[in-house]
Amino acid sequence: MFTGQIQIYYPEWVSRAKAAYFLGKVTNKKLILEKQKWEDVIEGLMHVLDYGEYSLSASKVALNAYCGLTGYKAKDVFDFLGAFNDWQDHKVNILKNLKSSR
Image 1: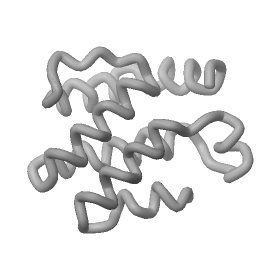
Image 2: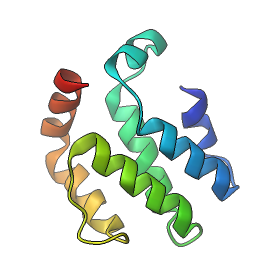
Image 3: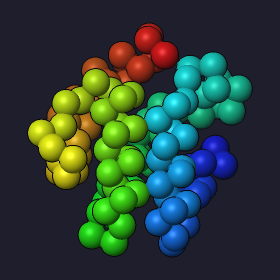
């Protein structure tokens, strides 16, 4: 687990926002070095999105990171449910694209 991924589970919103930001910058090379998977990165972002009712700022950062990694086009800055649904509906294709492009 990346240091950034561990911070996703911290109770302070600032830690979750920073972690989401840095997860949005992950590359295949970094994943190979850390022996991690893209699925873990996206699941971490989904965890931060799930905290939306507690920390809107952190959730917005996670949504931006998800959009940047996957190409998802959010309807607005609060399209957390849309990102969840996109991940559930297109998980296989998203992972395939991330592995081949980053």
